[in-house]
Length: 298
Image (tube, rainbow, N blue to C red; front, side, top):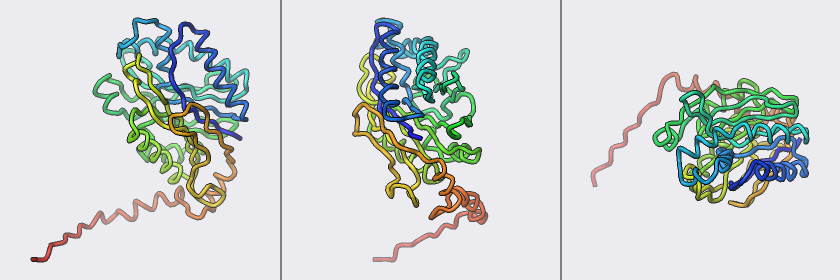
């Protein structure tokens, strides 16, 4: 099957129809390339705040609340697109108020409707310290007819035990929507996603937000490029990159993913990272020895 990761810019919409038209254009573009799984980025839902009107311009908390309030619009539009095109879509994540608690939530859609959601687990300093966002519902494995899929949202991908838990639960594909304002942040998520593909001998699908959005303080500046990563092993690209867009260029990175190759690599790859992970514990039973080197007198 083919999987598509979006390098996606945010827009301002005057009405729901304009939002629906943009989503349809993007989905049709990926489907036209044969994609069966489409991944939109972290905070891709922030453009929904524009549907609340000019009052949200420049209003940090107001735009977060408005984007959360407009989530039913995304559910209608993305559910309809997934059904009509017969595909699975991870919608752009965004703020979601669960009572008084603010979480970062991505909804997963299939041909039959909403399949569930994944909340971000690990908050960045901005999320925790400036907007009081919190970790939400636990990790989920989506066991679908086209593969077992896990989701780690942006910063989550930088913590190996989260993806490891998904791999141990059976995940073969890990979706990594992201939003980073600087090259260093993008690189952290990119390196994290590539490392998770290596450690767990799976495919990681990295979909970043890109471009300016000067009316919305939480996502004013965004940079990155979309990509799909696999383990650099037999049958895979030597550098581990299956497909990649140009930097800060809107569009889809699309690659064919063979689940049987993932399973063969896990069973009989050149290395067996997934199988050998538990051996680390045995190597650490005696702790870490410190070797102190004393500089000789000049």
